[in-house]
Length: 336
Ligand code: 5GP
Ligand code: MN
Image (cartoon, rainbow, N blue to C red; front, side, top):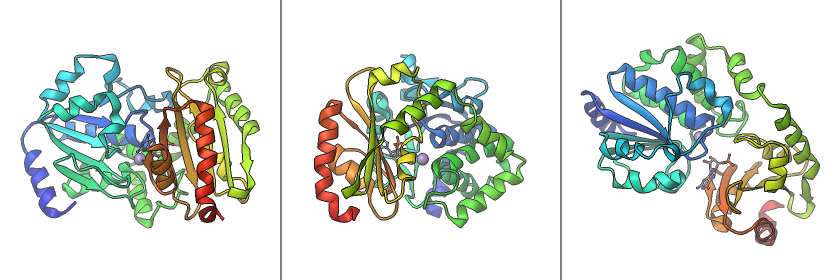
């Protein structure tokens, strides 16, 4: 984001505004962390801000919203008015209106000034201000830089730091994914200086599991299929299986990474049948050069990053897996 844009945003924020902050659908640690951090900051500088999430977020993120202030779009019809009548809309951790599904029309219709802060590839050009950087580890890292560019790094307090840390930690797989840079660590160091407890945040997110979630993990590990010739592995979960293990939102997050931890595996995929319809949610991960963003986009109209992407298939499970296996043939060279 250049100086001129920052100057304009500073001008916009110099008078009290009504602001809506939107994370992507099925928000993760980075989406909720960046939203709660930005919300606290905007309130501190005198704005009326409100977070509206397209749908519910996993329980292990509740600690970031202790007063339950985050509104859920699919639960409350009158939230449409808030979006249509606000001055500014922040789009956090997504760069394409398709990522907020049912909120899309309302955001499109709103005359509010739109600001995007996001680290995914290929941003769509629908915002007045776009702070997009696919080299960044996370949107939380970018929100830190954003507040800092506005000259307000001193306003990053304990609770803003905790939210930002949580998003950086989750989106970097605890600081191991390739997008983790010295600058990421530099930001984290500054957050730690604000007194947050990294081990407490880790416990909130990773050591707070229901037994049924761990049993579901064990079930998944049993189901991994290896496609040796393609250095690929996958597993799938049907609605029945999810119900059997008392599935709750967030329960399968991270499971796909176990596939990648197998020796000689470069590409890992999990297919999960949606509880409400027959569509299939796909999570794709890779190690090294294999570009899952491209694979997700070409085959399933999804997207994300080079080493982590997602998509939704409208085909049923069997058809989706067949398409996946057939498509691997085209990528055999890249995978070997
Ligand atoms: P996950 O597998 O954790 O849901 O998503 C991995 C990455 O891909 C995330 O950065 C996420 O934002 C992106 N992503 C997930 N699902 C979709 C999708 O349906 N479309 C696009 N364009 N990106 C997705
Ligand atoms: Mn993110």
